[in-house]
Each structure stands twice: as C-alpha cells, then as structure tokens.
Length: 598
Image 1: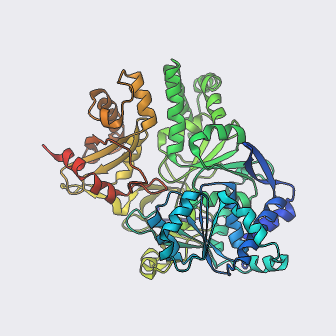
Image 2: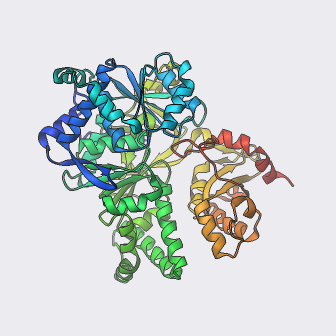
C-alpha cells in the first residue's frame, strides 16, 4: 500500500487556543485533580480550579513585566509542575513558549534565545541562570530572567497583583488557532537546531485525535499519567497537553534515577517513554532474578510471556497449555513486574526508536501493553501510533486520525494533516525543502501494510552504502544489538568500506553487575575491560542477535568496544538520545579505522 488515511475524530476549534483547555477544565471539572506535585516528598493533588488560578497569577506577572502578545518567552527547566504552569502562563499572557533543554550548553542557549528573539527566559536553577548570564551580551532582545528555584513563581504573582482579570482574559484570547504556540528547536543531529513553529491548531489536532482514539486510556477522574520525559521535547509536550485536554491527572518527575519509587507512589495508569526505559525495566528485573538465584525461572517466564504475546495476535489465541503455564508465571514473575510499574499501569506509549518484536511481545505477554508510535518535532509528536484495541507489534501503527501517510517512490514517509508544522522559524529554504509539494518529507524510510500500519525501516540520510554497493539501514541492527543489557549504544559504520562494522559502548550500571558476577577486579570500567575476552564474547552474542535480523551482506562483521559511553556533554547524542553520527564518526575515527585495519 502506498497511502493510507483515517477520518478525524476531533474537531479543532476554529478560533480558540490552548488556554481554552484550562478554563474549560475549571468550569466543567472544578474539583477534579488535573495535576499532582510533590510537596514535602508527598504527591499532592491540584484541582482544575487551583491550576487555573496559579497559571493566571503567573501570567499577570509576565504581563506586568511588559511581555507582549506574540513575544517569545523561553523556558529552561527539568520536567516539573512549574514547567507546565509556566507553559500555560506564557500562553495566557498571549506569548509563545520556546523550550530549552535543561542540559543545553551556553552556546546552545545563546543560539536558541538569539534565533527566536526571546524577550524573557524562565530558568530552573542557578546553573541555568549562569549559562544565560554568560551569553547575555549577545542577546540584545532579552529583558528578563526569572529563576524557579529562587522564587520565580511567587515573584511573578506579586509583580502582577495589580493586573486586572479582564486584562488576563484579553491576553488569553489573543492567540487564534493558527497562531504560533511554541517554537521547538530540533535536536540538531546534522547541524544547528532549527526552530519548528507549532501552532495551537497543531496541538489540538494532535492531542485531540490521540485522546479520542485512545479513549479508554484517558478517563477523566480515573486515569493518570506520570511524565518523566523532557518537557522540552515534543513527545513530553504532547503528553502534557493530552493530559490537560482529556483531562486526566498529570504528575511530573524531574529525575529518573528514582523512577521506580515515583511509579510506586504515584501509581499511574499510563506511562510514556522511550524504548531504553522499557529495556532497563526488563534488564533490571532479569539481573535481580539472576542475583537471587532465580535467573532460569525468569528466563522461562520471559520466553513464555513472549510466546503468549505472539499468540494473542493470532486468530486462535494462546493454547490451553500456554494459558496454564502463563498463569503460573503470572503469580511468580509477571505480577511483580507490574508492581514495579506502579501496579495500576496497563498501557504505555513508546516512541523515539523501535521497541523491537521481542520486547513488545514480552510486555504484551505480562499484561502491560506498550503501544509503539512514531513522529517528529515537525509532526507535533505522533503522526502514527498503535490503537489500544488493534496493536500490531513491529509496526508504529496507523496514521493519526485526520491525517494521511504516503510512501514516496524512493520509500520516504510523507505526511499530511492539521498536526504538521507550518515551517521553520526564519528559515524559508529549509521549510520549502521539508514541505515540498504540500507534504511533510520526514526523511525516514518505511512501508505500509494492507491495513495501513506503518513500519519504519531506516533514515534516508543514514543509509550506508558499502564498497560492494550494498545499501544498509543502520537502525534495524543497531536496535537489536542495543537491546542487550550490557550495551548502552551501538553505531553501525561501513560507508564506502568493504564490510559493515560497529562501535559499541557499555552500560555502566550493568557492566558493574556483570564484572562482579564474572570475577573481574573491583572497580572495573569499560576502559579496563574493553579487550577482555569474556566481555567480548558476550558482546559478540549481542552482535549475533543483531545479525540474525539482516542479510549476510548487512551483518556486522567486526566491532570495537569504546572506553566510555556517548554523552550529550561530548556532543555525541542529542537531549532526546539520538546519535550525532557525524560527531561520533569524527571523534572515534581511529576506532573506526581499527575495525578495518589488517
């Protein structure tokens, strides 16, 4: 199939904006908890009425400071309650939010604030304030810097005490559906980040149709979602706005180091994450089972879950024998895994990279369905996702209702719909290229099956052509290799080379466990073990598993274990964990050469 579409399930308001949602919630669901925030270490509910009041108080402060309709206000913070509050406060002042990753360098901060022409920035910490201060001389438009950790919320509320309710009402109504809501800067995998202009209409179309199609996951007063993705990323932003649109209770986690504890106390019914999160949950559970001497039981339970998950997708369903075996393992293993996820969670939405057939079926088999989706910043997050009642593991689902997905002659995925961005900020050439012929050109390669389910097979610009002329899509094999507990990242190489190779980094958490279990010296690191025969044998197993997914000509013949992980600080990955292949290739050129030497 070359093209597939679904009718819209949600009608986008013709003249409204996203602030309508919080006013509607306060009117229709005044006493319903729409947010939860940590107060004294305890999750405390915030009703729709309370949230609206807190947003409007902050908006009055922005107006008093001179922020005008259409002005850009930057927001640099971890994912926390105040992020959501300030996002809506900026819109309620008639302005446009410009998210900045809290991990951004001073140079990146200068580019985003300067390129967007931000008149103000709300930062979280002293470190963020210092980053802004270090480049402020190059930001002539910047007039205000507020710091959340130094009382920005109270400061704004006090400053706006004399601003009337009528003024806030006028400002809240200033933006129309097609006006910019936000300028989200892309990850910048191939150069300077580009500012994607996303309108209020884009988010209404995205979140409205998503919520309607996944209605059983968004029941007001019953369901809740825990957001631990960066709110500055469009996936996290979509989560925020879908929760408000539904509405369901939203909690924000700024630090995922204690994610298990947060899940246990918040007890969400829905989580959204990237495959690495779900891989970690699985790998941690398996490692704990092995440490407790129950590794064989866990592996049998995992195999049964995968078999059960696959059987669920067949006409006859699981056999009687499989159901009985599944029931035993549910008591021994699966129920404990579900408890780790909070105990109430039955669904998750995964994006950012492929989850993989094995992991998808495993989670389905334990009674926790991970629905894969696909999208980009330019498509306001998900442009395709698996429906809750008709999942096809191995695909990223059907198009967002109200949109069209087309496969071009060269295999590129093209998208059309109200959720697609209007263009890049102050970059007409890039806009014209991305929106050629009225379609958004994603740059990804994919296929559509007979039911309109999309599968992504690679990235157009990342296709490797070996010396023998073989085209290789790195994502397929990289994702399989990276699924191994010891592997943090994998980058396939081989452009113009005689065969395909790979650079592999080690997951520091699991490396320490592996080293202890295999009699390696205390304090062993990736650098000290990268040539260890036992370790290389384990990584070879991961590579063999990856090779099983591709043809011989596409398989990894040799690999190099690197002495350290790829980091955002070193410029090797983006804040959304995408590889900057050109930077990695440059910084590890000697390692790549070593693969092909001799």
